Amino acid sequence: MANRYLLGFDVGSSSVKASLVDADSGKCVASAFYPGHEAPILAVKSGWAEQEPQSWWEYAKLSLAKVMAESGAAAGDIKAIGISYQMHGLVCVDKDLQPLRPSIIWCDSRAVPYGERAFAEIGQEKCLSHLLNSPGNFTAAKLAWVKDNEADTVYNHIYKVMLPGDYIAMKLSGEVNTTMSGLSEGMFWDFKENGVATFLMDYYGFDPSLLADVVPTFSIQSRVSAEAAAETGLKEGTPITYRAGDQPNNALSLNVFNPGEIASTAGTSGVVYGVLGEVNYDKKSRVNTFAHVNHGENGQTRLGVLLCINGTGILNAWVRRNVAPEGMGYAEMNDLAATAPIGSDGVCIIPFGNGAERVLENREVGCTVSGINFNKHNRAHLVRAAQEGIVFSFCYGMEVMRSMGMDIRKIHAGQANMFLSPLFRETLAGVSGAVIELYDTDGSVGAARGAGIGAGIYKDHDEAFATLAKLQVVEPDSARRDEYMQAYGRWKEALGRLM
Image (spheres, rainbow, N blue to C red):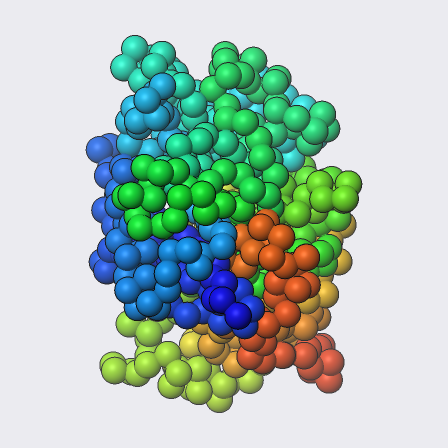
């Protein structure tokens, strides 16, 4: 049987990764990313963050070349292409499809006042009930900044606005389109009207023609053009069949499609992304809500509720540098932490030392350590309290998600970063009451599998993820549930005093 491969791109702010997946075995046959060091972010002013869209395209081509060389695959064996991308970025192109300025990316904060003003003037109820979020610092607000500050040089020359993944799809195909999920993450989608958010477009004075045509997330969205084929070595006509922002795509990568399922990551910052089966929102905007990859399929509601915690792995890294004995690695730290009891004998760490936290209504409360007794506490208690504090911050956010109607039963995660710690996993299962399943996957591999669904190679996500390697299952320890909940209660009391 001829080889059938699926190609996935993951367009991040630090690099672009490409993976080639065997469609029949589900195995990743080659992966590569470029550049090898963190990609530059332009910061002309404080709070600004920009990248050149053309650089993503160059990185995509270079990572693709590595993958093709490593795998020895023929271009004709690639049956579909999927794209994952950094969310909320703004790309503006002219009629020749050339970028008019660098992309204003996700971590750029210049547009905050534009979103806040829209929230106040349009009204909180209107925004939340239609957008499910405050306009905030998302793509629409970034475009409003361009309109206000670069009208003559940029805004008046815009043919289309798009997200980073839309740009890569355009470079591959020469066609401009986007998805409902993409429009929702940019605050351009009205969930009540099930269409473009015309009230927000009118408020900002945006011409509706600036938005790209909407294509289904899983579909033949476009095909590789002759020009792109010559530039990349791909075969002309290869279909592009899937596209999603990095967090919805991470959930897809972990086979999270149904209400009550959660995808979580715990790197420098942490994310809990859960699927909600009904339209709802948090009245305090402590979490964000977007269309999930399968929203609208068969008329079903599938919303992705996104909780982001800034102070997660960065706290664990700080503890390693400043508390753990010199030279101690993370695995040894995990062993040290496990020598202290659940609740760290009363030591409590609030982990919010990496800026304002959305889950705390954008307060910046900092990191605090409390409950230390000089006569009985040592390094082990501090190392454990740090991991527990990170878990408790996740569970605090999950309470918001539960208040929106989410029944959290299962947490899917990659076996990486904080999830490598048995203590972290057991504490999260113990407090949340959810089963944790650990998998071997990443965003580019997920994008490739998504492409297989969009191309009809897989009949549904169950078939697409039938070969996903489950590495471990962590069940909640019901016998110690009270100990975990008492520790979490003390942590919430300490946070309440700070708030």
